[in-house]
Length: 381
Ligand SMILES: *Cc1c(COP(=O)(O)O)cnc(C)c1O
Image 1 (cartoon, helix red, strand yellow):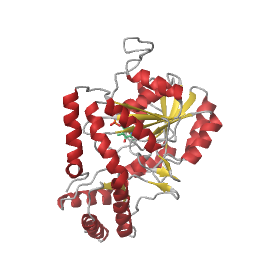
Image 2 (cartoon, rainbow, N blue to C red):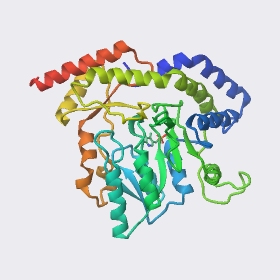
Image 3 (cartoon, protein in one colour):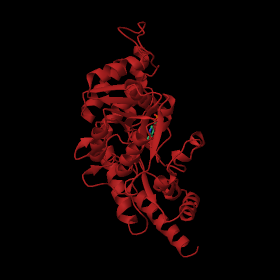
């Protein structure tokens, strides 16, 4: 059994993907070719924003967003502590300071009350300028953008939505990757919409920001590539990845997102009386980058993972260490009291196999095993 079955997806889409690849090989326009422009157009339409620029990966997408917004040394950028490292790494990379905020125990997304408190604290301390925040759509569910947008307006902060896992999610029919001043996603193979290598995209409704994004992704170009007007990156999408993503985006819209939700609902229906199941807020839709359950203790979680593995069922721990506990941030001072949910989650979460090519039978078998193993643990083995 695969945790995410990319091979099954390839078999389903093989004809279109192979034909696309063959065409690129014969046409020879390997970087930012015409299919990349088509893809950007389709992505922007799907998400419901005016502009989309693809780039080399989801981390670059975030870095470019920070560069475009001129975030630099002396600036504070608020990020959740329970996320993948990129979200904070890029803040450090541009010389600014990530301020770690705890997450909500129900949704695992940034806690808006603690976010507002953290902004107030940074203002009071007076050492850093609060400039932006990077809420993450963790495991596929959009962050609480009603509250986040209110806080951003109140304190004049920019929002960069990290939609690396969130592509396809919705809040009241409005799509993820449309909630930030700039929003980003990743096409790393295991993400809800993945390519066959690295890739990413940057979304915005603001024409000026979009133009800066286009410049920065190609060495800070001006009128043309050899007219260099600012410091940029080399961060472009290969044409090969675009022809892989185009049929995948269609399958994603036609049935993959629906399938993910069906399998998530089935997991939830069977497991809800045994473990804490993921909670999707009223009016929200998740794209289920992960289906993540919460166990009663670290011992129970670890026991379950070992026993599942023995039964041939893969599972993953996202994430075993919150960012404020990472070695790279060991010298930072944090209000540790306020980050306890992130710490607790890192000890108790377990992600189960999730992808659009599961079957009901497989999900039921996984659930039976989970229930059986937890029963063993709770009855003293
Ligand atoms: C995967 C991921 C990224 C980085 O994307 P890459 O394409 O791997 O660079 C950033 N943020 C989050 C939350 C992610 O899950």
